[in-house]
Length: 197
Length: 197
Image 1 (cartoon, rainbow over the protein chains, first blue to last red):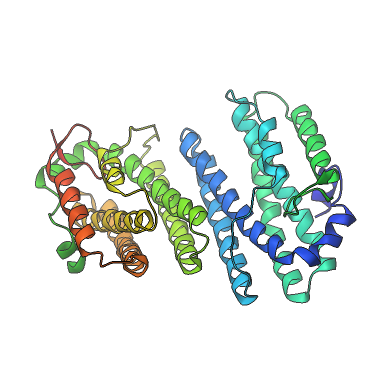
Image 2 (image 1 turned 45 degrees about the vertical axis):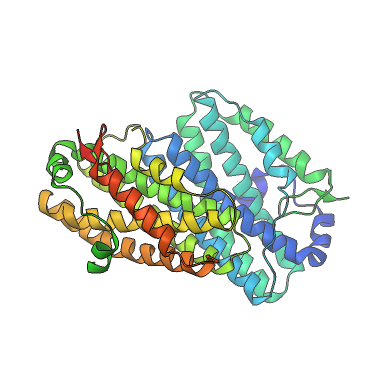
């Protein structure tokens, strides 16, 4: 996991962690949403990139894993009698998406880089959450961390593979943006929100 | 499987079966597309119906199963050196979709009924295909049939559960439309196309 911590430009702020116990229901509902969206993103790539057979296979497996996590979050919610309600989207995902280029092959490279960064941040948050959650939830999140780290690798490696030029510069720009979304004040508490304020 | 055959209003026409050997690549590519779309439909319901916790769990599992089938079709294609290319959508899915009502709760009922009918037809076709495929493909499709039959049940039962009125009339109208799409001439050969012509 040190790889993930070195990869990201900043750790999750203490203020976000401190807000978790008062927002446990939102944390879980938004986490369920994140797993759905991760599966949805992978699925949308299955539609667009049928000429990348290796990518199709990896993404389909990844989508299945995200859906399994979604079901696990649903089970935790049911056990705790947390009702699933609609939540507005987090600023984070939209902020990253807007950064992506829209012409190919840059579009694919950027979507994969965003995927890598989101998986890395999720993994980092799962680990940092350990200190503020009860034992049952802490263990649940520890268990999910490994697959997020694997997904991070899949996205990052494939981005490097399909990019016609080195990805370093593009990745640095994305990581700087991501850190600014994580470190700045954010109105709504969400799984990937910034500093509560 | 007799349940499925009794449920549908017509069997797959012989003329469609006769066209299969000359369109094996299209059959497999369009089948891969169908599995993706089935997963996509289930996923879109996960977004829209967060107030149906039981449905969410069942649909997420169903989507995972469709994605596993997608991966299996990809493997068959790779083994046979069939290249994945874009195919126009089949008349079938659009024809059924247009039949669905757009106001709730009718919208959910209709989407579930359409799901049931598509799974039933897929199952029926998987079985009928046995007579025109080589041993390896015949076995592959026989293996998939069981889960399609299970998905058919999930969709049909849940439609009956959430519908404020008996589903019989609505289902009869849908099955008549489905039979007309299957029995009439269709320009493009696809997994769910009508009589080639």
